[in-house]
Length: 104
Length: 132
Image (tube, rainbow over all chains, first blue to last red; front, side, top):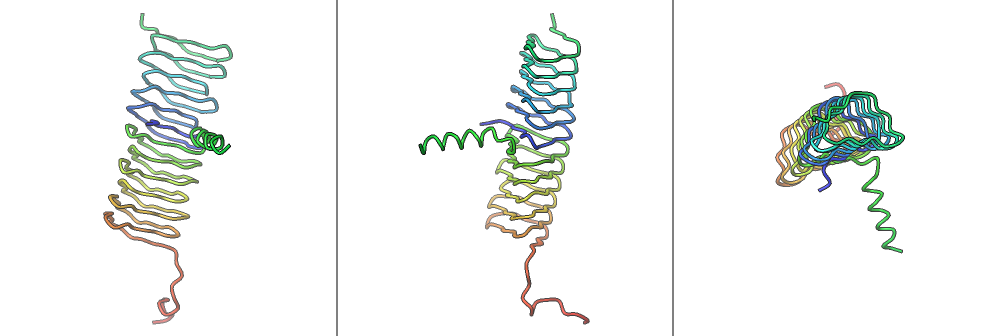
């Protein structure tokens, strides 16, 4: 069960919701919410608010993100927006502009 | 050697940038467009425009117009189809809409309401007559 994969050439304009894992290598404009882990791969472009169980970003995200477990900004990631998650890592080479709410 | 190439192939198909899957628990409200193939196991409410092949699995459903290189339907489709290649409606599928494609095939057991416009050359005696 691979869950959902949005390939590199694909664009979704609207709302994507999923009970499972979502991997984005393409483009999403709108809203993304998943009950499973979400991965935004390098080269992907997401202009959407994201809520997920956990989120790993290697691509470009513009929007507010929230995760039940954790958010990982990988090297080369670019996030403009607020982060709400109990755990956050920002790797060397990631760029980030926004507020962090760790809910303490 | 053969094993190596099989592994290579499976890895390429897994990470292929031109192949997308909308999983069983997934739902899209809006437009889906772009390059590559798409397999739909979930739900789409909106139009789908693809340069590649579209497959709607048994569990999948699309409410909206579809334009793709080829279209395979085993699930539910409410909307019109435009295809540059084959349109295949499998047994168990539920389709409402007009099908336009180079070839359209409808399997026994499929439920279909709509029009089929396949491009074909009519024999001379069936060509519409000029004048009356």
